[in-house]
Amino acid sequence: MWGISLENKPSIFLYKQMMDNLLDGIVAIDLEGSVTYCNAVAQKMLGIDFCPVGIVLSELDVPNLVPFLSDARSGDKLNINYHSGTLQVTYQDLMQDGLRLGAMLMLSDIGQKQRAERIRREFTANVSHELKTPLTSISGYAEMIATGIAHEEDIVRFASRIQSESNRMLSLISDIIKLSELDEVGRSQHSEPTDLFAVAEECVEILKPTAILRGVTVQLFGDKTVVVGNRSLLQELIYNLLDNSIRYNRDNGWVKLRVTDKTIKIRDTGIGIAKKHQQHIFERFYRVDKSRSKETGGTGLGLAIVKHICEQHHANLELESSVGIGTTITITFP
Ligand code: ADP
Image (cartoon, rainbow, N blue to C red; front, side, top):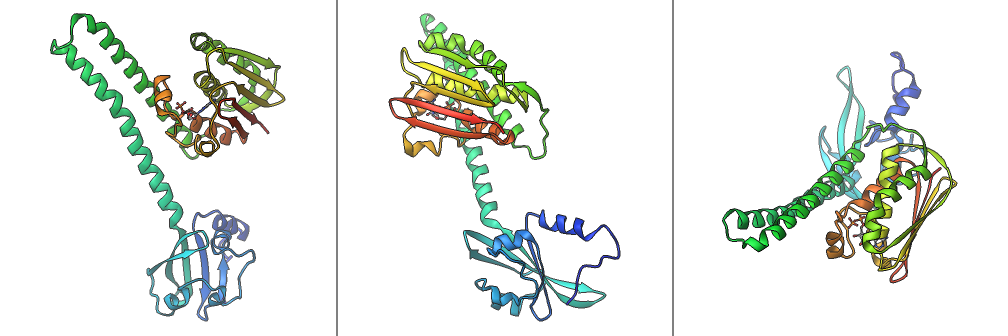
């Protein structure tokens, strides 16, 4: 058996923290195949709840690993389907002063990487599609005006279509920028004590004209309640929820927004969301009724932004909805 040299500090505690915080699993074995080290990630990937040091690796019964290890050379890789995902195992000789001490196995969850890559590809395809549609329409109307095909009486109508399609593109681009800022790992958002009720009052004021236009009554209840967070993100969160409750409402419907005790509860008498859609509406570009979303200026990104902001603020998000009756969303801050 061999161990990590502690001659050159930093401490073993720091090494352990570093190894346990890697994204990949690391398992070291000696010449007899006994485990000499296994980080926390590897334990999780292998689905074991104990430290396997001293155990012969083949006893862990990982599929196909034993034949792979019997003639593996440094750099060899093996993909195995294990537990819920696909693991890639990379074999690496462990050498010291020209002597082979054993080997190290690096475990990567490539299933997760493939999933992340698929989500990224789908997002890019969606963005391209969503941008192309309004652009095609803008270009078509502009061409008709420029070439003189458009009749005099149609010009104002075409220009207003160009304007509304341009606004749609601007909202979409602004939501994409917001999401990519929220996605940026390690980007710290400025936090300050923020009164959620005051933020809600601002949102109600901004959305008043939209509500009047749609014949929806908005009422705000509650009182001052302070949470530590990013003010502009919190405003974005309340604005998106309120905007949806107004846009997906019925004629003469209402929205009740209650903000108190670090909780935001928004209830509407809108069209509601069927059970089968409820788990998807927080995904990027997921819309239940695409034409209604577009018609009312939706981008399909509002609730994805809401979910992200809740996660950043460690807030709990709950959805209750019945088709034809309405939707209630409750957000509770810690
Ligand atoms: P959008 O820009 O399309 O409104 P969101 O991400 O904000 O995108 O919402 C996703 C979908 O969830 C919407 O397209 C709509 O179908 C549904 N939805 C969101 N809020 C409500 C609500 N209050 N009532 C009914 N449906 C809603």
